[in-house]
Image 1 (cartoon, helix red, strand yellow):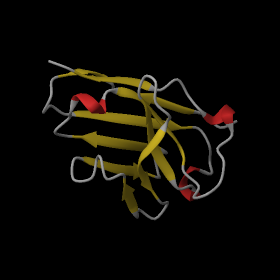
Image 2 (cartoon, rainbow, N blue to C red):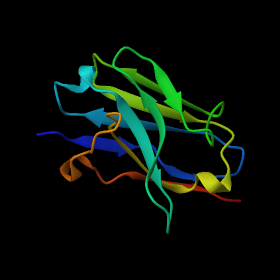
Image 3 (spheres, rainbow, N blue to C red):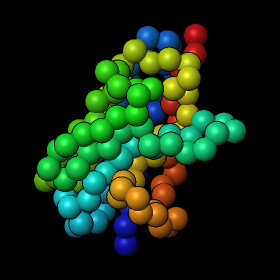
Image 4 (cartoon, rainbow, N blue to C red):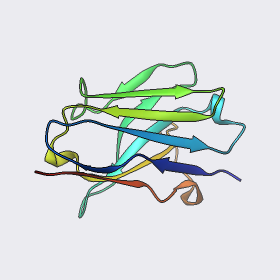
Length: 119
């Protein structure tokens, strides 16, 4: 059974930082390209950062140079360091696989973690 558990969200002021964590249950974790997604109220879920099994990273333009994605294959964990946060970063953040051009099974989505950027 594939399960991802996100943690680390919270309320932060504009310009502040947060670090999100994701714990994975599958032994396939090391081979998957993984990603952090977010969904703001009234908007579609979007991929903001991705990391391949060997460590290559990709970022959405909206978070480039502010967010850093990393992973620890030995511990089956993934992190997202978010700096210089803006109100528009407010969303529920999810971790999941990020296969290019392929659908993600709905059962893989976890509860997410809420990030609120507000003064």
